[in-house]
Length: 221
Image (cartoon, rainbow, N blue to C red):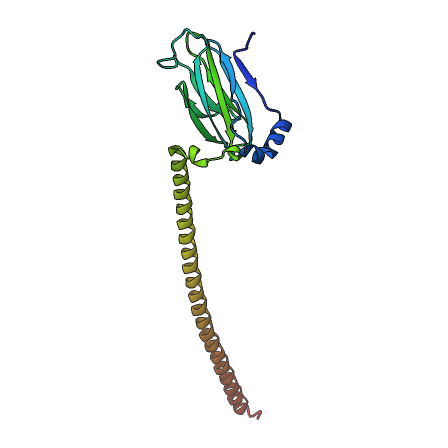
């Protein structure tokens, strides 16, 4: 068979929806056989999985020489296992011939699991893939990077809570200060109004006395 440089095995949206609805049922079933394919020299082949945002994609891979007479010892000769997001951002990368991966989808869409063969001969790759709802024992995927990510998120949330608490205290102090200023202003305005009232009364009494003397001088009264 002839293969292109990059071959994708895609899962349609309808099939992904059906698989998602049946994920709880799949959780009770044993692990199904993985996907096995051959990767020629300097070739890259990918398997795609539809993932929702914040969904967990986990699994195992192994890559061995396709020819039975070639020794499997040593490194992978430049072979690379990658997990790519919908925007082709690398979420996971390893040069080991076998291992375990667990990534969290940052956005909804097709996530690609790609094996690049940099060896001098063809290699046979096997993938076992599970989504978060299909994982039976979550302790198997609680790796160090996830614990560190959770700790970082908790630290960020703690700092946000402290910031909100400080903001609330600041707003409370400002409110108390404004209430004190308002009470002081009302008291000062009261005294100003009393002074204005007394001034008007004095002016009125003075005007009455002045007019009375004026009329007496003119002998009008």
